Image 1 (cartoon, rainbow, N blue to C red):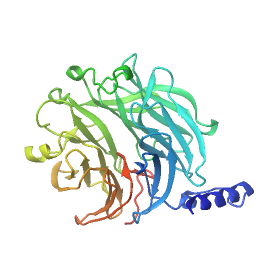
Image 2 (image 1 turned 90 degrees about the vertical axis):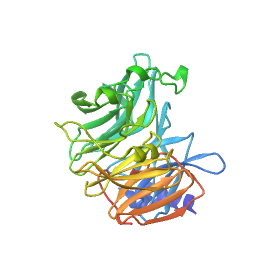
Image 3 (image 1 turned 180 degrees about the vertical axis):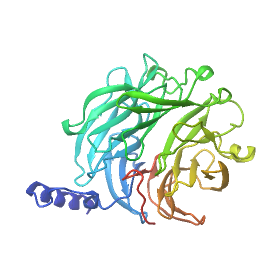
Image 4 (image 1 turned 180 degrees about the horizontal axis):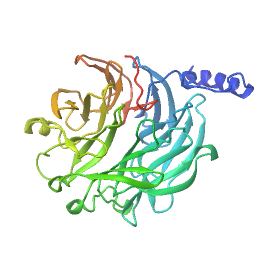
Length: 365
């Protein structure tokens, strides 16, 4: 039935009856997520605010995250690191519009972001021979032709976001050097130096690093508040219990690390899988699939507010009344600000990330 609907809409588009399709024509999804089906194939799904799958489109291999175009129902699905491809999909018709291939000597890190006007796509990449992070720049109007590349400001750039009402990008340089010939082996743990870098028009305009004693805390995933604050989740590469796993940064200031007890840190098993701000920017939520834990932090005081157990939880995104969560066991869950959890199960394994269709936008649940 879904295929028939897409074919019908594609016919209307061809005749010009629907001159400018919108996300409503794709089933009004609020979020995107990659998933694995029971038969071992992979898909990109649109998920609406009522925890329903609005569309399900095939992917050639396992996905990681996606980027939603800000003006039209088009998505870029990224392969899991160290993947070398990304697929551009028309989410109304299901047609594959383009394939992005990383240049020789590069691989993607599974994340990307669009410019404010939707004319450019930015991708995080590893220049593995040089051991340096890069940002690929792709021209949307020219079928996503690669037109430039910039320095990411560090090693191992993973996540990338755009700050609100600007084209300033923030990059999570995880600090870990890898090479595809050695798979996912981490080559420089003893000397890694993660940082947050802000990039505008190819220039690193600001960069902040963790304290030296925390240099083994790889900065991996980002969330941006409506006011432009940046929350980041980390993955500990050292021994024992990590000192902190969540931080926040305002441009021009020092990094603030979220405070929690040793037991609460131990519960996260050294790993933050995804992170999100509440719709008003006052609360930060971090998930750990390894620890089966969701933690809430107060953004102003940098203190933990609480946590709850959710099996194999990873994806998290903001709604008007709380957060939406996805799990590797197929759960779609709505977590309200009051702490109530409502969920439904799908016959899929959700991958790591839940991506809002519109950056900094919220939906009702």
